[in-house]
Image 1: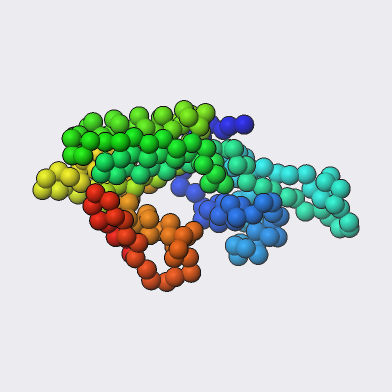
Image 2: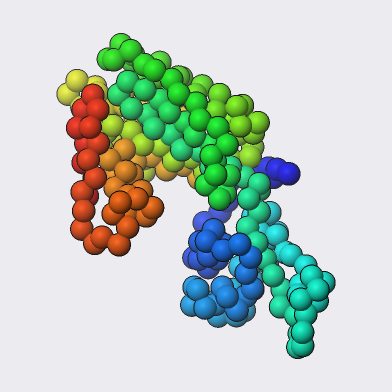
Length: 228
């Protein structure tokens, strides 16, 4: 089952908190969300109902309907809708493009790789090939642009908070990040960042640096990169 998503307005922090909880739980109740996020009951329930209306959560049969009811009022139960949308991860390197499509549980549905001729492309050509690689990965996953919730792209260039890179004396940074924040603006959420910075974030979240306060992630390829 798929959901067509529209570009959202800025959302309350409570929605992010509940989504974060949902990603790490199989199923949950409002009480469990309150314990895990610190939200009040009314705020937690409002956020859960909103996310259900958006198609990102599904309400499960309550304990009575599931045959697990004992006494008292049965709690409403919710779960993340894994198939509600897909996430796209893009590694736009110096000589390669790798795109992975995943469901909302981060299970990989498809990965598409493209090799580039080193320093043989201009910004416009690279931009076209990156967008084509994203579309190819979506096709291999059997999904469409309408089903994408977010795209995150790592590029071999410094990137500001708006997803844009500064000018480089030789034009290298402009080629590495050829206006991707505009090229991918059909997705509800687009994040463009330095590839080494994203690598550092990934290591601290699910990799070798989990639990570390200070660390450096190094990328070694055609060029060296470091994320702190």
